[in-house]
Length: 158
Image (cartoon, rainbow, N blue to C red; front, side, top):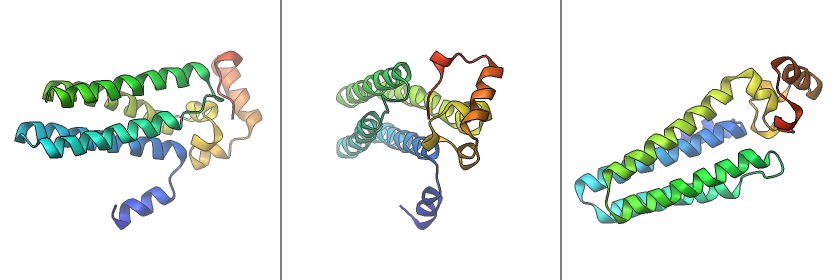
């Protein structure tokens, strides 16, 4: 990791770090595709190892105390992408790697949108909010959720 990357991650919020992990997954998936095209078995295996390591890390850091339904969905997503990545590697399938890339990109983009959306910031756990979102008092966040029609059972608690 170069100095710029270290500096940018040093001031990152929780959600920024999640997006950065997704970016890492994408980078290594693209590397795996390149290795399939170049018939580089060792390179493909190393790229897949990095991808699976990140999926394992993401799965291990899910917070079941925050929202069981969401964490269950993310756990299922990580498990499916893990399995699909291994299948892509086993069959040396560029198309399957590209399918994983598209799925991961969609979820990554959703995280990036949530990072910029003030309403989403209000319902995210405090440690995942941006610095500005962390300053929103719980009372204000609850008022925003009430106005937007979010039901108490669908909220995340901070």
